[in-house]
Image 1 (cartoon, helix red, strand yellow):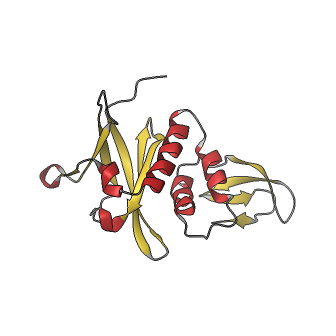
Image 2: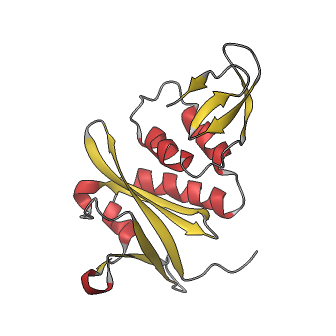
Length: 175
């Protein structure tokens, strides 16, 4: 596997779960999701005008690596040190570490999204559903949905603008 660069471009997503603002960071390697982290927006102050940044990895030999988030223009650059600690929720960080591990080892984004959306007991605005909504944006147009047939005509479904859609009859499921 190619060695990962120390700096990773990232997209900054501002979203809401149960009326609470959350921030999801998606680190990109070769333009594809590679790293995911996030947490409640009240723990981190990133104005909504910022949608891109850089994750800077500081490798350590005896402890976990530290990631800093840089965003803003040259004259207005902000650095948030140890971004993982800022998100300070062990359940969410464990969850996003597993997603990142899967992405780094070649799992297709669509497979992760499909798994995240399968939890029928989870409410629509859970952290998993929020991550699925964010990651859907990285699925290639026309990618086939595995094992899902159209409710209307039974044909295979594909992704169109983030929605699961039928090319035969036009039926679509967004969520």
